Image (cartoon, rainbow, N blue to C red):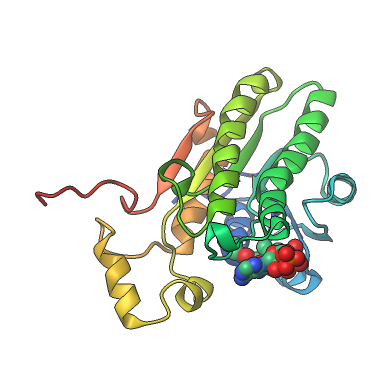
Length: 258
Ligand code: COA
């Protein structure tokens, strides 16, 4: 665990910070000393996250698909907490669907949140940091290992996350001159109330999934939050354009001779 105060001076904005991994990351950044703004579509869970933060926080409602709303959210967060140094692009949408059954609107909804949303928010941070002459700033994008393996049943999300991996590498190079490090995290199966209900609702499905994870267990939200804190911190000061996979080895080929 990183020492207390590691992130003091950071002002972070976490999209989708009202629930799940977004909430866990927001709370960990706050625990380590950052001021944290959370952005999402629903007010109540955002307020609940802010109420749990140990220091100054701010909740602002916006849909990341709407560039105007994103700009307004960044303005409001900076007005409340000061110039933003850190962005966690966590907001996502996903549902299991066969590609041939996916409507154009369903495709647009997921690609809009994941890929467009990540671009809109990154652009806001990039412009602000560049305008103030550069900074020690960081972007962390949440992706998934199916960005490179392919993701049958989630073509919209898999294609969008692949775009986000490329955006991570491209912006890492373009924005190095502004002092902005850009990295991604690819979480594996993380044990939360939502994933339990949606992904492994039966004991049999749970066992089947566990057999595919070399470390033999699901991850905890805090393990993703620790990875995020590391990438945001100066401990990762020489890390940019990377994808940190935190999945117990789940995406690796387990081979025939194990
Ligand atoms: N199966 C098939 N199609 C679906 C669907 C599902 N489970 N859920 C949504 N869609 C389709 C809708 O039918 C609609 O297409 P249509 O107009 O052709 O019928 C399209 O997606 C948009 O749906 P809508 O609910 O209007 O979009 P939204 O922008 O309000 O919601 C989603 C965004 C689609 C991502 C929604 O699933 C959501 O908010 N999910 C909760 C968050 C989440 O997914 N978290 C997991 C993160 S990994």
